[in-house]
Amino acid sequence: MDLRELAAYAGEAYGMAEQHKWPEFPGISVLADRATGKWVALLMRFWDYDQGQEIQHCDIKCGQEVLWQDPAPYLSKPYRMKGPKWVGVTFGENTDREEVCRLLDRAVEGGEGPGATIVLENKPQAQRVVYGDTPLPGVRRGFPDLADPVPEKIAQMRKLYRYGEDTFRERCENFCRQGKFMEDYEDDEPWSGDYKRYFPTYHDLNVRQLRGYFTWRAQVRRGEYPHTATSFAYLYVYELLNGIGTASPEESLEKLEAFLEGYVRSGVGEASMEENLRRWMLELAVVKGLPPEKVRSFADPQLLARDQALALLADPQEAEPGELFRAILFFSPRKLGESPVLAQDRGRGEALFGKVWQEALARSRREGGDLFTDCFGKKRVFDWHPLANAVYWEQAPHPDACCQVDPVRVYRCRDGAWQGEEYSSVFFNRERFQGLFHEADRQLRLYCKTGRTLKKKPQEAWASPVVEAVIQADRQAVWEASRPKLTIDLGGLEKIRRDAAVTRDSLLTEEERQEALAPAPPPEAEPAEEAPGLPGLDDLSRQILHRLLRGEDPGPVLKEARLMASLAAEAINQVFLEELGDNVVECEGSALSLVEDYREDVAQMLGGGNS
Image 1: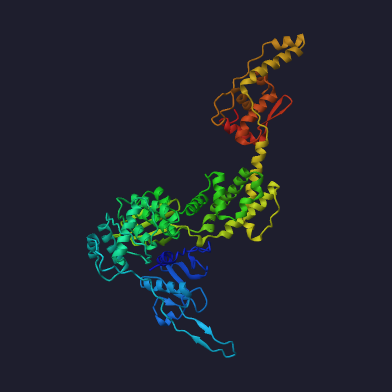
Image 2 (image 1 turned 120 degrees about the horizontal axis):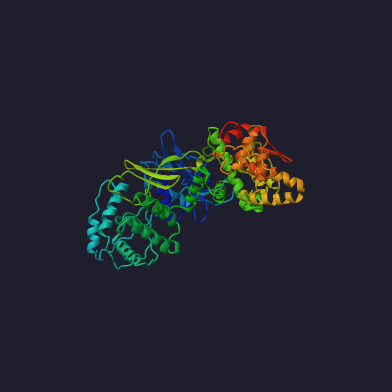
């Protein structure tokens, strides 16, 4: 027996839902009385790394007298709870289902069992009468009227039951054998009584109850959902899980969804059934090898959202800023989503917080660590028992299989045994993750000049350099974006030359004009080889640079081209600014000179040498 079976019994018998009160300890939950809210059981699951298996315990409020009244090796003093009302239970192969369920019944009925203490007189030595323990009557099962005829089909079904050691597996096998035989049977004999049974099967019902069940099932198959005993509803669900009345796993899941909507969520049936139904639909989809997208449709949306957030945080470099920030919010304090940094400019704020995580993760990996693992641990492998708390039977061990539900969650079957793999929140270091973003929020408020100042925490000092680097990079980006963009249209230089020539001619005297018309010696031809790394550099600019590299005056080239020295310098610097990030030519009046710090770079980029 395991804890899932106990939780299922509590849901069927008393409408109790397992309550996970501590998000940081997902393996610990409670069962509480629906009327009083008082705890009747504390359920505990822990992973034993030495044994490589999950350990399950439970404290039940049934009174410690059961330890000597009916001792069993799996019963002990409580593991976590205090006081004489609590008993500890260890779950395993030898844990008796009926006995543990009886202890839960005892806890629900009154903790330490029936009995009362009545004080007759209020004197120093009060006399009192103590009534002894009286066993509570169990759930009565109706017996068929022997005068009622037994339908032939039901009589034949009952003969199919094979008696053995009455193990749970044998009960499941008998249920499937009888269920397939009764797959198409319908009756017309309603039964309106109440019936409660842990893991109900056909063998547990008398003839009247069987006829009532098959009458109700026929209505459900027609799309009608009248109220019935909760155990009848579970019997129908068990049929669908085992493919009784369906042609495929897909059809079983469709009918389970229809039953969830029409019977449970509509308010006709017990609301506590939904948790079991949703879990069983997911497990059935995995076991039957349905595609991952179909499996995900039955998974808890909150669980899928958590997995998606973990996947993004593990590899955030290509994530959209808004998407990455939502992943951060999944594990950070709620107050981060209300930061004034976001109120001022939400898009920019989300991007800044996202860059903090990207920078922190990249920096940790460059230094040989992994901040993601520090915050969320490694994937953990655990034993997974699909449909263990349902009447379900597989004729042979399940073949090897693998279902990758999402990037971080996978279920595998090897040699008939299932295991799951996931990030367990038990191993999350939320303090480190939240510390990073508290420091980020503190510094970003100061940087953006918004909101009240947060207190600096010494334990978050490790995060300060990360946030400072992000702020410095953003400051540089803002400065670059604010610079005016200067675009030189080299194609328009000819018009500039013509305009300059007209202006010059208008200022020349007649004698100067004659001198200008005198033939000038042709300039030396300069190498015009293409600089492979400078596609924006024209032939004229190359000639100028080659002259500067040789220490010659580029004036004759400028004069021949009728180009002003300042414009030539601007055009050359614009090209090299993209490569070197600085000016390589300086202009003083009409004289050009090469910046010495970049002489070798310019020579190399022009093809080497100073020629």
